[in-house]
Length: 478
Ligand code: ADP
Ligand code: MG
Image (cartoon, rainbow, N blue to C red):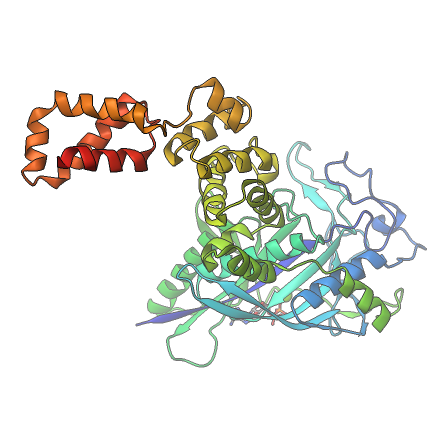
């Protein structure tokens, strides 16, 4: 039996405002517990929430970027439930009238195809505090610093059909919110996390199957693994005659399994109602125009421009525009290097990204600056060094030996382009290998590589490869 997987994501992006969504307390990460929670965040009696305009601006910016409808009127609602890290006994969120409705996003898949994912809505809400279960001698500590932090919850349509598509979508949103500068995207600190809704249905069936919701996943790798393992569980269950129940499940990355947290029957009835302490949010055209004017070049636009301006493949352009910082880095390198952008693209996306990934560093932390890499590529293009020697130069720059010219000088890596210097080397090699020469002349073409290797060895890789080829051909043929 063939099964089709159906996935919808709810992504929580923490908005990068300085203060909280309904109070003036700071949102900075990492402060001592309970030093950044004011009377409003603590839910003390008699205090009133005041909406942070910056949060509204950021939500509107997101709505515009995904071609959505930014609601001219949205309403905050109370979502009631009891939990120790929720001091008011309710979370302020948006229910019936969210600030953003019906947008979409195009995602690119590994096979080069692309696909549109619908975005049902995005609404503003406040985060809860944090319960800490270690270090308290059998008790639980509560840190309310995070209470009242603004979140944008982005809800997709159930449009994804594999874990890979879900990851591609999540990455795209992750990149977009950072381009828009509305979220720092820091997943370790919990600024960007998602709930994955997963169901399966027999291929060809129209109705969706019953879904399970996998809560609070904060890495791309875990989203993929959690979905894959959950799909496997559901299919096994159905094929054994069982039924999937609608429930919330937790992904345990240590055991690579999902476990039930609560079923639909035990699910909370949140008794949503409009928050009487907050007025509806009314957005005027002038405000929206102002927000529109702050929109940066978006990832898809940048990608298209890279394809056209630099003659890059759509794939390469996609890699290089994955983050704004990387795109900026690449553009600067092409400026410094001049010439073919393809060469700069290869160095940035290949060697540099590879080296950074190896040590787990971001492009912004690269020990090789744009000026250094651009300067090195310039030396490849003007034939001072070969592409192969450039690998050594790059490694030396990475280790802090200075810029390309300094390294080339200090290590004597200048390419030998003077044919009167290469010729005697070739003559020697021909004289010392009469057997190979005879075989080559007798038709064993493959031996050409042997001679090239010998010349390179004798010149420590510094002979210009093109010249070596030409001179060898001449001399060997006669
Ligand atoms: P709730 O209000 O219970 O959170 P929603 O209808 O808002 O449910 O859907 C939440 C998320 O679940 C959305 O991202 C949606 O696309 C997804 N979803 C809904 N039904 C299914 C299904 N059968 N399989 C997978 N995902 C689903
Ligand atoms: Mg939901």
